[in-house]
Length: 445
Image (cartoon, rainbow, N blue to C red; front, side, top):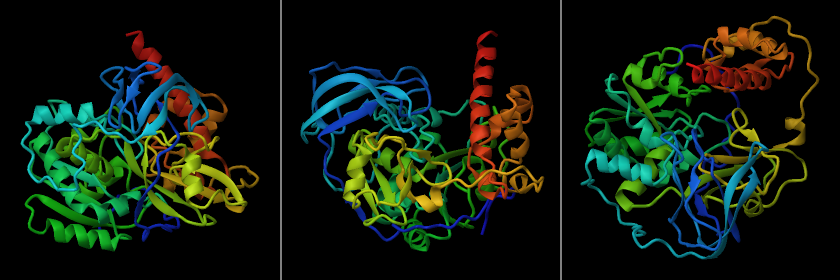
């Protein structure tokens, strides 16, 4: 089976919820919608305090070309537009809505009937995706309508569906494939129509044999869609790593994009959202979230409305275990610590992970022993020990010269370091600083 060639690690899968069917979480009493749920400019509110909204009502419009709409996931009244502490611990503007029921916009098709044929034109599909506020559901949250309009000089020949879900613990995409395969296949056909090509490859890691078998049976009579089992290796879900695993092509360093090697990559959750938007006129206001951890009483996969506080998910899963040492939004490798369990579920919330204290506690850091394990593990071919040292010394020029902006923040380096150095933390800091320097430099041109 295929995989990428450089670096990578093999963490314990810990897919504790792989056999847990998707359950629907009850509505919150108040829903909170941060205006920054995507890469790019924050959305701009188009409602005011006291306004009445329904499920699916647009409450914030794109704040620029690289931005995305936000829709209400509940019906009720806008309580206020204020700030909230997000998953990263930073205060961000948000819209607060007091829930008064579950009245949907009448334009949304709520039936379970499968819509097979898309009669919309390419331009109409892209506009529909834009209006639905769809972003990359794998965690990057890149506005999908922008991604589906690659530069004219790029010739696209392959659509790759990211169904890898290589991050330990998470199973939201796995369950989505098992419970909604038909919708996913129709969504793929819609994307192929937009791109004007006839080849799609669904990349699935080998630890999901049931999903591979089901998708193969569903696509056996469908021309142009292939299911490709892949070796288990982290971070195979990374865009560049997946492209190499599926096609053998390597994406050049930034500013090169997947489109430069003829590929467009979409997460399987994004594909499902595209089906619902284009075929059911349903905006993106809910998603599947895995709630899991070794000590969690009732690990589960939940269909959750955006804006629901994480605390409600934890309560459904049996409450926070007494031995919890860290609460994480996402998986253990690339997820971010949740400083406040009242933080809301947003478009990029793929999971809520509770790590026991004995696993979460950081051990004493020691000096680098020059073993080069971090270099061997880096899937981007970087030198993490050098980048971390440059960051410690505030040597941003050295960090930039050594391609720090190519780092995908996968955490492979830190997970392999025998000296327990917080390599990823230092690299993230430097990447943030160098990114700011580059933006300021470009603004002067």
